Length: 71
Image (cartoon, rainbow, N blue to C red; front, side, top):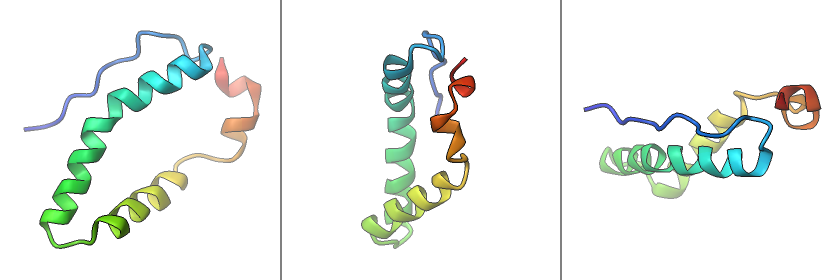
């Protein structure tokens, strides 16, 4: 069974609320991924750090500092 992720109800310009909503939508899937990694024998802290490292490679620094990315 694939996890469903809710679509945003806010525009990307509603920066803080949009980010909070995005985190809320992704949280169950990320928690499930961590649980699967633990079930496969991976240490929880290492699994979380691996997710952070992989996720950080998905965005450029300018994605957070360039106002054009928010519109």
